[in-house]
Image (cartoon, rainbow, N blue to C red; front, side):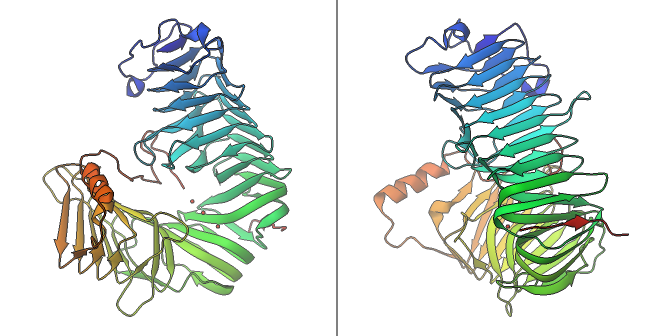
Length: 487
């Protein structure tokens, strides 16, 4: 354990075995000429600098006004979560923080209360492409902040910078990729800063006209009494419009839009059909049968994300689906015999006692690595039925499939790649019905990798609406734009 100041973890959920691998390492970090390592790093009420490559096998905590500075081109590699709280500061200056994960969203960076995350030509990335996330949320009356500056600053390979409460985020040059704006958050992207922007509309009404992507974007977007996003000479890679709780949003003259809809959970027993929402060009239309209303005119709606709750039943066909999740006791169907439906499976997951069926859809791996998970159950006691995911009549050779605790995956009349399928818990089930493995020409190395995966604990699951450790909502991809409220 590397420690500055005397402290213990303030929450039971963060407690872990602290192995003292490098005694008295804290003052010596700057003096070391070889990489240092330790189980955990705690910075409690002091300022501590890391100027050599360092590996932390566990978690990092900065607290009680303490400051951790990574500098001098050093790389801090962390195999656990990073907590910055009670007025702490994590500063990455001309240096790199690497999140080392065994599966997507295993760990995250948590900035709580009046704490700060500061990057000055700093980089945050994952070790091998598996995704972490960054969360800023209020605590004990304090509001967190994130400051990014310098052309070399880059926050990458994450599933979203998720800001809550009245968090403040400033990006001056640099690239933060997915930036989520909700609640009373204040965010700005200026001076060539780049972001993929996710705008949350929770029961609110708004009109956006136009929404442009590209370079040199200047505009101020906002919800009255809610969040504000200022863009000044910014690079906008795309927009995601996220609707929940009866939101009513219209867009016009827009490109690069991903529409995300969270169903209310009480749509009734009737199957809600959604068809033809997405297109490669510009179109007009209305979607109003999933609990919120979305109207578009002369707009390019490129992808659709749908998150089902309660007992809602939805069929998606003749469109391009990016993310799809079903939980509680909902039912989601994607594709049909007479439809052309594309599925990215950027996030495809079933939880609890929900069912998720895909039939005759086309898996699209052009812009992402498709993955699907039948995952653990939060609501249903062990021994009863749990989340069931079924694929019928499809080529699944590009899809990674994971069956987790009590989850079930059914492959019916499908072709699949056995090296991309994992059952990581003995309570999980994978059924193969008239399905054919695509193993022709499988090399010895690929076969060994396949066998090794059977014993691995890696999985690709993440529940975007309720990040595992926080219980707070999510996420995600996608001129001069303006937003005004409507009566």
